[in-house]
Length: 403
Image: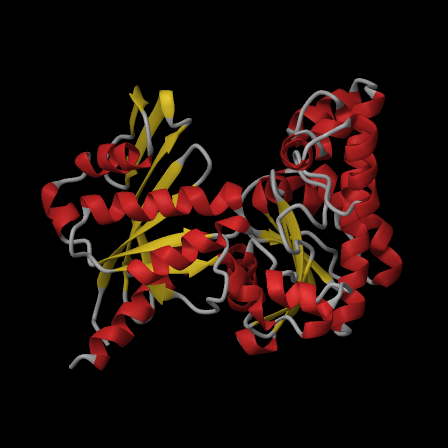
């Protein structure tokens, strides 16, 4: 195994590119710098943070992901850039891939083919891969897939009750998303509590603009709330989560909506934004609720209620549960939301320590009481660390194979 590698992690969103440079060896992952370009386009904002230097922040027109990566790489010292040993890319939908995979033209084509399942997500990932291949010639690259963690789901959790021939023909099944985040929380919970990852049995919740829950046993996902697309499951910032499919066809007929208009409705106009009528931002909605805004109150209540239902369901799936773990922007920084999700679950063994919970508005820690039969934790997901580790492992294995 190689002694150490400098791994660049690239994570592309619909209008952003984030990167972290991490030094990885067999036992540790150390972050060296991080950067981002937000709002790619005429009003883009670039930031770069290096541990021993002041932050760089500037606004500039940056038209696409290739330019975004180029701008960030140009800010690196030449010796740092030239020492990059590998690049790890987060890819939301891996299609048939169930393991991190070295990127070649065939893998790029397969990621492109999986765009039909996640058009809003795989497109940016492809742009990031093409940008990195263009700027870092000859540097090996690895794709790490969000869907891969959930490939362990048993058929009873992964299949829909649709005609099997249609499901097989069109690849219709529950793929699950946020897999890298759920895996990160699971692995960190094991380290934090002194358990082997194989002995973990927890419910993880990634709560941000996108939201999902997972039932995790050992190193495997047994079930997760997102399904064929990231629309299913919990209430999210602009997605509704679970909804009767007949509502869709009803609205198509009654409103005369096209398939693209329905897609836009489900991905951009629903969830917290749709119910509240004002915002998808939880902090704003909590403030509006405190001022007596009834629709803000309805949105927050629905968000918390749906999360309670999934936790209860996954307690049943797992049987023996050590903890419920919260991550993501809302999960990490909204004690009121965590309280409202967990307190109704007291009969199932979760007891919230009010002071501990209120104090956790960042970082990690336990917020359940000492008497709680099931722990409740905040553990920020660190997707970049998982991607860096997987990239190191894949490239190390490849290096050993060619010796």
